[in-house]
Image (cartoon, rainbow, N blue to C red; front, top):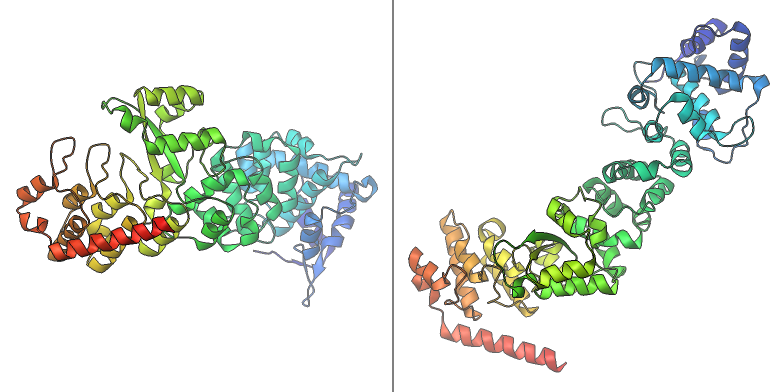
Length: 505
């Protein structure tokens, strides 16, 4: 993408003139040529290049003592380039789409290097020695965000990791109000670019803008690869980071360890409010999970996703997106929201991120670091219910793994007969799980027998009056309800002894 020029006055003059307006005077052009000659480098073949590394170094050097020197042609080149930019790119859209710190195929390398120099001049200093970021924005009739896009400009999906200007980006971020006008999607997008380029100062600046929900999947991947950048995440944004990565399909160990080391627990959740048109009573509208969440909010605990953060309208992950009704409710004072819940006017469904990782290794980690087996996600669904609901998809032919999973949840206090908002238990969910093969049907049978061996109540009815016994009878699987008494007694005694020892300790 570099373009070379043979050694001659005519070729250099042509290069410069292609980047300036035709009305430039020869006297002024000679000053510019003299100045530019310091940025040409000749290779072994006698060919000159404008893409000299010193140009990049100088652009990035914020310690430079460069000031406008009219006699050497600085202001001439800057002014003519400004006119060129305004003629070539009359609209802001044209500007940030075409002016960038990367040679592009439709334009000679020298032309962009010339613009490089001109913008660097305007950014770093004016004749009075003061910053000129806002002057440049005003001169070009563009917005600060357009200039920021120019600093991070890319061609297609291929990013240039060497020429994008950290200096320019920091000038825009430090000296304009661009951060106050950016959406969270725009902040997340620029955070991705800063992380991909390894720009710690820009990363820190974007984090400091007090945006909670700027952790896209790409950002999470970059943070998991670089502990130094991960340490830039502010304390108040850590619950959002913990939630955003936990719901991802892949388990990112470095982020998990970083979050728990900073005091976060795996029961982090996002609430969704609903108008109580279903007639749920107060035991559901003001249940234990709701009470615990509001206790954390009122005590100011850091390990909680606040209602204030949800006002940002999270765009990622999907599980964090909130409804218009939720946005309307969270504008109210906390005491008013609590009153509506206690009075049964509204109810809450929580999304627990750790419910996305119902695999043995990840589950062990989450339970070790604060995940509560009694956490009710969605319409009161526990991890045990989800495990039984997804028998065919999650466990396939692995009965031993399923039993190990259920045992792990029960050992950590999961209640086998806990009911969701509609009265369904884990046994109901196991019966409702789809079985497409003989193997999955056998797995379903083993799950049901295993739950019954651990005291699942086959006669407990849901809100429609249906029990597991009714479901077994309907499907012709009454034999599944008969368990081995010896196995039942042995398992229950073993669990009882284990809990007794735990309580004594």
